Length: 269
Image (cartoon, rainbow, N blue to C red; front, side, top):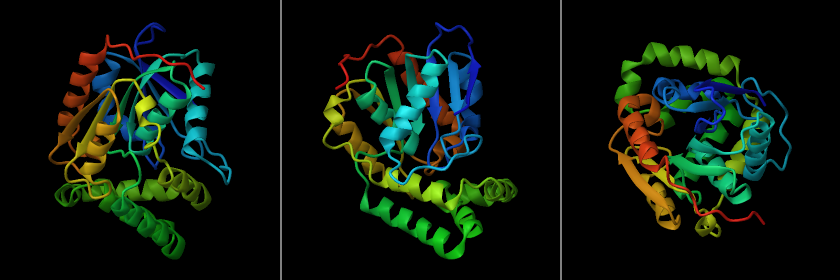
């Protein structure tokens, strides 16, 4: 797994790891880089089986494997303490890291995530699976923005979306990999272990998210011992892209407030 380390290069600088969602690639975070690299050492990566981290995923691929892969890649770079900002699947990787590597991760931001899969989100995922299996990669890719962006934003960014469609089709992670990543995501369930996640967590949702109802973030925040809940009125599932200015302001405010907050440490196992 290849890591990109941007921003402050002092090894003692606070480190932020950015973990994207089902797409898995580092480029998702472009709208946040200028704001974050001025204050932090920022780590980007393409998740295993996506982008520059091309690989065939095992049949039993899981959230625990995703967390372990990231922890190992960071350790190879000498990064043993970090905070994580994760979008959807990426946020759940952060929660899994808190369970499996509790002394390594200081803070977590979960963007449009969940405690356990909501029936509405399951329907959306099953619809996307059916598109991929029955209509092919192009149909899957072209439908993807419908679950990510508000309608008016899409109407104003047709040229950008057409360019992204071409890119995503050309660099598609593969049907088998996507299905295995999606299976792992759909089976992630933190209800029984949420109380053990003692790190400060910012749970942030968009109220107009078509894919993940905002109530999922509210339920997650209630289950976590040290959660702060924030919401944005507009922006869709990918509001960090569509309304980056407001999103970045909320994110930086919370990071500033928790820079000196230390989680209650526990020993793994």
